[in-house]
Image (cartoon, rainbow, N blue to C red; front, top):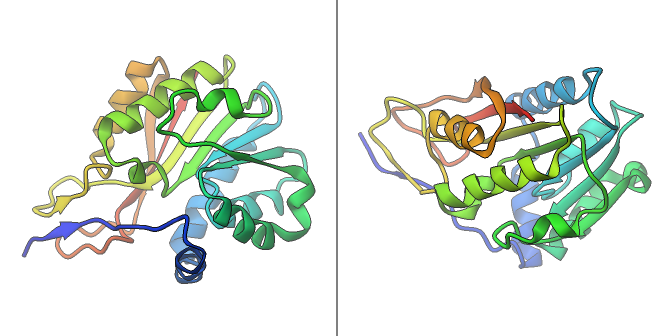
Length: 216
């Protein structure tokens, strides 16, 4: 059996965004990904305590991290004002520690919009929506330029698993390509940390995601 794996979104439409957020309340595997990212950004030795999330979305990861780490400040970047409104409700009492930054990652000047230099840039289930491998590679390059020495990039995103016969939308591609793009951007020793909900035979659009890390 084979087919196509992908999804279309209307992230400027309030009804679509709320419905999407309601459908994707984090499951146990997704919470495990949040915990893995939380563990990485909590390690001693980061240059500062500011974290930038690319693709804030409904704010589920922001809430998870802020409720468990009282030290960091948080910046959520997204291109959708509608998502900001949903995220404010999700994050709730932790919102005073959050800066909301509107920017489009397809615009190569987006780094100029952030409030301060982050020590860590994180993202989940977002960069694949940029629609191509080159667009993701461009984001990795901009992240390298933004981060200080010792800063880290962590991306947990949908990927195309090895050994599948299915066709995937262009933004979902093999982890080896992700790591190569990180390496070409200048990052040291990028690594695959974990894969989640792997399904090569009959995948859904919500399965097959991986967590990758790189240090500047």
